[in-house]
Amino acid sequence: MINSLNEKDKKAFTLIRSRIINYGKAPSLREINEVTGGKSPRSASLVIERLIKANLISKKGREISLANTIQLSNSVNTIDIPLVGSISCGAPILAEENIETHIPVSTSLAKKGSVYFLLRATGDSMNLAGINNGDLLLIKQQQTAENGDKVVALINDEATVKIFERTADTVILRPRSTNNTHKPIILTNNCILQGVVIAVLPDDIIK
Image 1: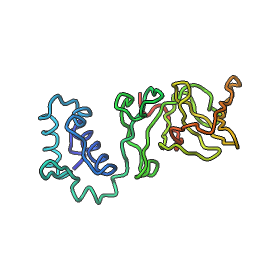
Image 2: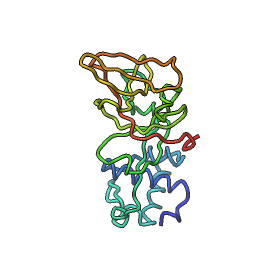
Image 3: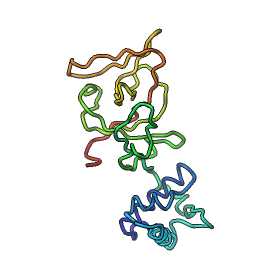
Image 4: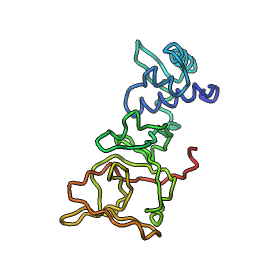
């Protein structure tokens, strides 16, 4: 069924499937147009009609759901994770203006029930921890961490990835680098983390 679709309809179905599985609700017509290049609500409606004819989704009133054969299929094993660009202090990480694109990631990595995002690593401050310039980092969004976790924090309006260490009075964000110009960042205990690195993905996933 899926293989018979054109590329635009495949992209739309991937988006619809991911949103329903993870959030219980289909994307809007505008969001469908964003991944298909459609220019009007009618364009997205035609995509939906083709997916219904392909027995991939069903529609009752305005509510879209996955066809029973899709809901029960073991082949549904990825979800779309947003790749976040620049982040500013005080702004939500997953604000629409921060999201560059979405990348399918296995549900064995990005588990249902948590919020994830992808962040592109810059610099060499963590190269001894296996994080190189340009790598994509799969981040689980949370504000707590254990000692030794690779974490993301916003420091001076920039996202930084470091090794987390909590002492009695401070939080220390330590680099792991062959470049000794990188120094630990020492913060108070009220440091707010953005998330924990779950996996490091190669930079050739997206260009």
